[in-house]
Image (tube, helix red, strand yellow):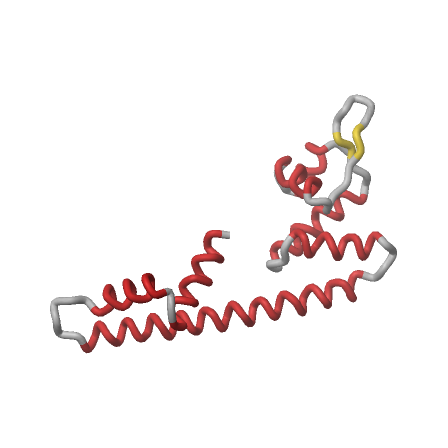
Length: 149
């Protein structure tokens, strides 16, 4: 099956198929005409990749599971490990968001109780940015890193 047919059947773009292949999650061979040719299993692999990505799993992690399965092993053991790692990351993210929410609550409360012309939200945010310290600075940094990635 050629790349266009695979992409169409799997409901992905040509670029996605090329990306999966470049990351080692999908394999093709070049036919006599020079076009990529994928075996019948490629459609199943692309669909598995998409399903895993919808669950929030990274392509590199999914590639490990696919290699595990292609080695004749059952997928559950590999998936169990992958899901356990994902849950740790989710728990870390929840903790970061709770810390950031606490910081936002402090800013909100400071604004409610302050009657001066200077806005405490701005001064605290500027202080956190220049010092980078405290829970709020770390939570903000973690959120910024995730957004940029």
